[in-house]
Length: 444
Image 1 (cartoon, rainbow, N blue to C red):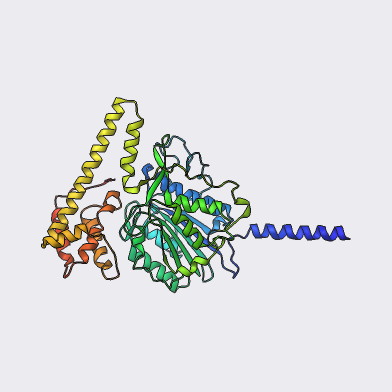
Image 2: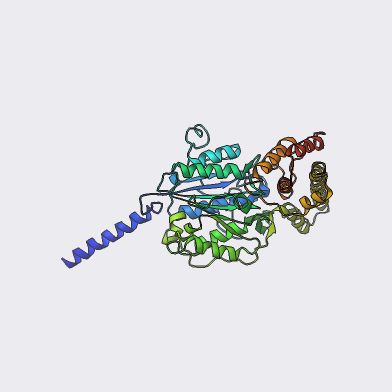
């Protein structure tokens, strides 16, 4: 009798354990976890962005978040790129596992754009009919949403392949989601240069949104783990640190606050920042990215030799490393030519921006202030700034298609801070400087 009772008890415990393992996305109050993972860039040079997102997918998948609750947006042009010597394989760290198998491909290629991103995030099923998988974040008032975005960025913007997501458009979208009760808590992790500028002085602290950014508003994020065989960087510092921590720690115990503090310490290349409702920081990570005890690693992550470089230096670093490794005089000559062309294009863009600013400002002291001051966005100047960068992108060159521009366009926020500044003058300056129809593209 006693043995029969123990057998029934054991069966019951096993059943409960199996049930729990199958429901890691369910929350105590009846809600569930949703996740949107986005790599906005394309091209083999940006290998690391899609590698980060593929790795993030594997973590959530292992932690029990079902594919029905995960949406992935990435161009999917890396795994089988002609430049990839390991066809069908994407790794996110040296000698790391292939993170590509099984990754969802809800939206790929040209479907990875600003409009689709905002519609997917906000749950607009009608807008996404006939596009990609058509799936959206179909969340409700008791649900948690995890958003991980990886790409280039600039002051007050995140870049996709051909266009920019401006801070006001993003914040307006999540404010509407809050008003429509699309979530109980939203957690946002952003890997991009100047990513803090998307939220600093702009994001309200009463929206039940917790944001962690790779950088403060004024600095570059960093690529890491150069791979000579693949001639690319495998990951990004902030992304690697939060994912390593998520694989090393017990997510049933670790909170968002604890992960933020650890990742901030480990990411010694930039200043990791937090924004929004910081009280949400007490939330356990199992309620954000799931948790499966069996997925805990027995060995802590090895973070030696990260070989990090600023994102805006990646193109130069890759060519320089290729030059150092080659034994071919012909190949060395070709690489030298590419470096010279890269610097030439950068100088053309520098002159163009400087020319626009000089024509926009009559006062020399004001010009010096605009050039020397740190760019800063506020609710007072953001409309002026976004108006100017939209005009620049349409009249002179696409910011998204010229990543080097991300280091320059922030100066236009300083224009908007000048007393009695008239944005019409700056637009006329852009029209004049860009009237010769010089098309800049691929300025890295």
